[in-house]
Image (cartoon, rainbow, N blue to C red; front, side):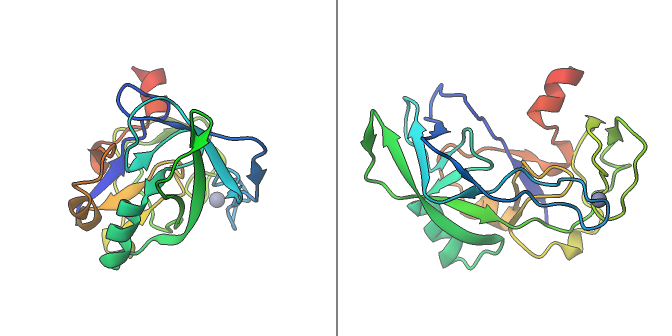
Length: 205
Ligand SMILES: [Zn+2]
């Protein structure tokens, strides 16, 4: 099975609207590595979930100040109807555009944090320090270089969507889920073994 990383366009509103979390934002916990205690994820976004939309077309996928993405009812149906795995819950998000609540239903999916290991050699990953951790592979270090996201034991991946401990901000899709999502708007991908995060591309280019 091939894997693809979602191209998170964040605040690019050339075509599609992005979202900015609205009013008081309730934050929960951030997950820590059980072995080295370094933080793995950013703080969880807790209900009530509200966000303001920029100008632009309403896509099936909305990026912005939140982690990952907000998805439409259409995407949620495709995911559930096909019994795809990897989203723990779908929390409804109230979206405002021009100060009015939009009528379409949107959800914030809680995406599973996978235990899959990354082949650091094949991925060309370099860090800013010498820390070691067998569990998260990162030990609180920052990535300074990489040329792709190559998985160590692809066979151990048991969900169609997930985030990794190495790059928890980036969403990975299985080929099956990607193929089922061809009609979903504002969703583009990189092949996982060629994926370089935007923030890293910006400092190494
Ligand atoms: Zn660790």
